[in-house]
Length: 330
Image (cartoon, rainbow, N blue to C red; front, side, top):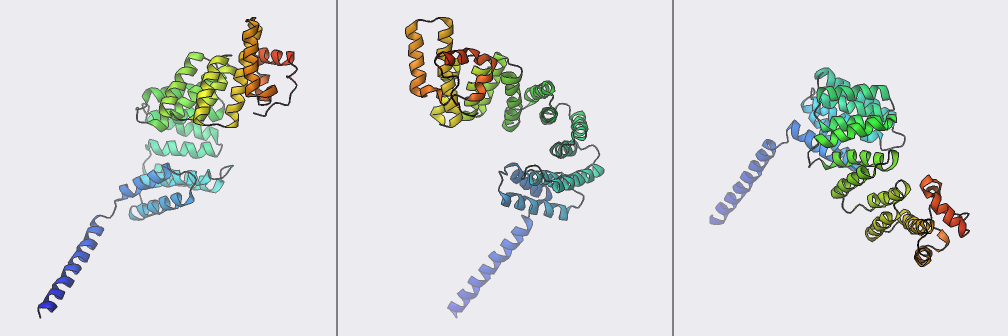
C-alpha cells in the first residue's frame, strides 16, 4: 500500500508539472509586436539563406492572423518581399508588386506612417521607378525631417539617379544625425562620402577623414584599405602612402587586386623618382624593388595606366620598353 501511495503521489506530481508547463506556455505566447520584432531581426540578418526568410514569413503571417489590421505587420511583410525580389538579378517583379500592395494597405490604415513611405520608396527604387521612389522618400523625409535613416534613403535614391552631389549631401546629413551605435547606417553613408571624395570629386582631406571613420567601424576590412590605397595613387598621385597602406592590406588578406596595387605603388614610386631627377642609386634601387616584387610589371593593372595621373609611370615604363606589356585586367 505504501508503494502504491508513493506511485500515485508521483504521477500526481508529474501531472501537475505538465499542466503547469502547458499553462505557462499559453501565457508566454509571444505578442503580435514580439512576432514582428523577431521577423524583422531575421530579415535584417538575412545573408541569402532561404530558410531565414521562410521562418520570418511564418512569424509575420501569424502576426497578421492575430491582428489583420496590423500596419507594422504589413510593412514588415513588404520588407521581406523586397528581400525575396532582390534574391535574383535583376530583381523579380512579382514580389515587388506584392510589397507595394501591402504598403498601400498600411498607408490606407495609417496615412501618416513614415516607415511605410520609406519602405515604399525602396520598392520603387528596386523596381527602377525613380520618380515614384523620389516622391515616397521625400514624403518620408517630410514626416521625419530629423531622422538619419530618412536622409540615407534619399542618398540611396540620388545615387541610383546619378546625382552624386545630392547623394553626398544627404549622406553627410545622415552621418550628422546618426547615433554612434547606428553602425550599419554610418557604414553606408560614410561609404558614399568616401567614394565621392576619393574618386568623383577628389578631396584628399575629406577622403582620408571618411576612410579613417570607416576603418574605425571595420578595422579588419582588407578591401577598404586596398581600395583606398589605389585611390591614393590614381587620384592623388601619392605612391608612398599607397605602398604603406597596401602592405598593411596584404598582412590582413592577400588577394589579386592588392597584388596589382602593390605593383602599381612600387613602379609608380620608381617613376616619380626618375621624373624628379633623384640620385641614380635611389632610382635604380626603386626599380629593382619593383622588379623583385613583379618582374617586368606583369601585375600592373592595365586600366590604371589610362589615368592622367599615371602619365609619369607610362613614360617610365616606355623607357624600359615595358609599356606595351600585356598588363593585368582590373
